[in-house]
Length: 174
Image 1 (tube, rainbow, N blue to C red):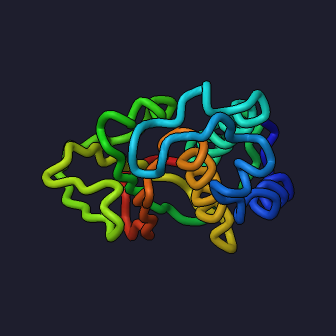
Image 2: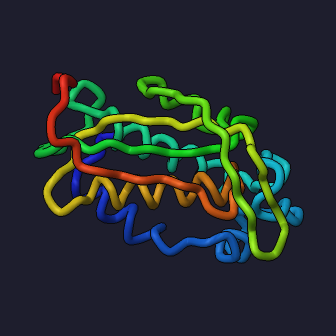
């Protein structure tokens, strides 16, 4: 992708505020996609533009987490961070491109106020991946923007839980 700070800033600026309604209005989502918190959004609910944007979001997420000079990603990474992402196990296939992760099985309890989706002891998968951050926390902003697009275009959770924290020490060699 030849991703660098300038291209990442452009991506974040262009897509950070794109929500589900805007994706419907712009024709990325079509055919009355399933309500948030229910089933996955499959290809039949995305236009060609929606499918292309999903691929871009996944490519950028991969580049942010795992990219280096060997795949033309140019960042000066100054500290280590840990991304923890919780996804229902039946939706985890959407993130199978994230190969260098730790996967932990977990049961979750979730009750949405409008009762669209309530999970009691739901099977979740917790994905953890350590990545390098750059000055200004721009990688984290890009991760949030990418995950938001992936959620709105495919995973379809009401709240996709992701947390990023600083890693004080690590055995991960960068």
